[in-house]
Image (cartoon, rainbow, N blue to C red; front, side):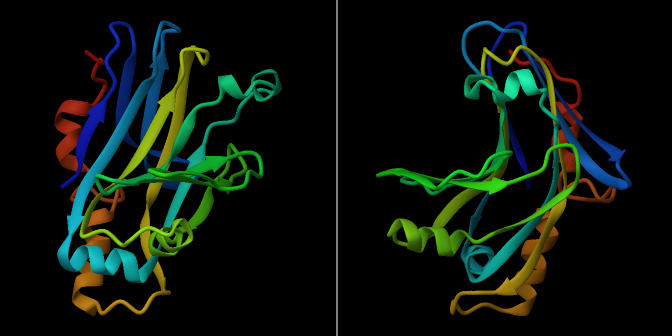
Length: 215
């Protein structure tokens, strides 16, 4: 089941809803940054372990997203940019896959690694996420459990409304020799589906996340 975490700000707002955009059904994540101190953010996540984690680490995960277009005046200043991507956290390390308009080399600290995925804004983009491969690149031991989620954030310098869309996830190809079962893979993909049908796993957060105001 997906859990929703969001920022605290008296005038910041978030909205999550199922919608159709550019010919696809998607989860729409909207943020309003009031320009005050601090970030406004949404983190939609689920905890993964056991067979589902083995499936996650033995396959590449595909995600289809659409990021907002940024006007040229805002592109000139990195401080204006929003953060939209996929994030995992195992309690010791944070691995982020960020959708980026520019080509940027991966960045790493002892506790974190960020991979930038070149993304053309304003149109649907399909990205492949190789979590086990990036753990190997970071020289980290594979986790026994982790949190996997979608994050969308806006700094105080990016005042106004911002939007990102996630169509869903899929398993592409097996890339790592971790023992797994077809049933586990199918169950894992089913649990990751986002707003494609009314019965998808994203629906439970909708009851309290739709047009909610950050407190």
